[in-house]
Length: 310
Ligand code: C5P
Image (cartoon, rainbow, N blue to C red):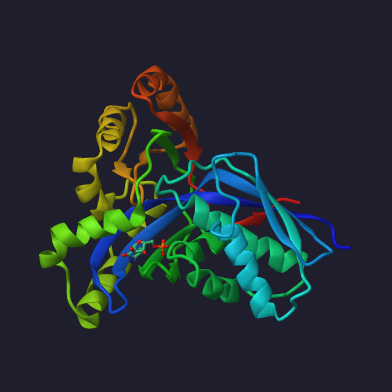
């Protein structure tokens, strides 16, 4: 009997989220810089002798049914391994807010792939796990190795960037009662911005190339604030008062070097030179955040994604 395996599943923020255009499969062609942060869930896995795959969670509002990405990832991995007798009992310690634009569900699914690959001794490489992850969700491949990566395609074409040298700090805020549907956000984007979309692979590749050689990727490594961009913010912010409140409270924070919404929202963040500066600013505004119904966290940018913790 193998020992239980525990992994941490970090959230991500988008330092850059650019909607380039539409793809043949109906998804959007994206150009993103994704960044892992040290706000993380933990997934504990142990073998189940009866070939069952079960999930429990310390947050009752999260569905632990077949739709959960952890169970979908476990089923896919077992099916592709060809060993139908494999089973696992999994327990999720949920820390990342749900429906927040922080890839919490995707990171949990990526965590299941990494943990069960180890628990079951399958020996798949990170690249093989990323290919499986792409079948389950657009953000999931990034979450396996995490860190700082350029993400193209639906989000699954990954190009690793050197890690940010000294970890910048982040203040993250979210209204716990609000979530934004990702399909809705992309649908709104298409409705409002379609006329400005780029068309065709050559146009997409020119834009990717200019991002790869962008001068701001260099400053990111040298702790100079990157020019944050999120095209979905333009469509979500005008229709979501919690995003408007969050951005309005983050902008005046002392020491912030950039403010944006993450993913399809509604969580928003401010960057700082380091974690201490972020924590000071968060504490100074704690009451204001609470009065606006926002939960707040201070955390750091980190150079990795899912990791074994035992
Ligand atoms: O892949 P994921 O399940 O995260 O995508 C959720 C939804 O978001 C998709 O069904 C699609 O409507 C939209 N989406 C998109 N283009 C992407 C990623 C997501 O249109 N690149």
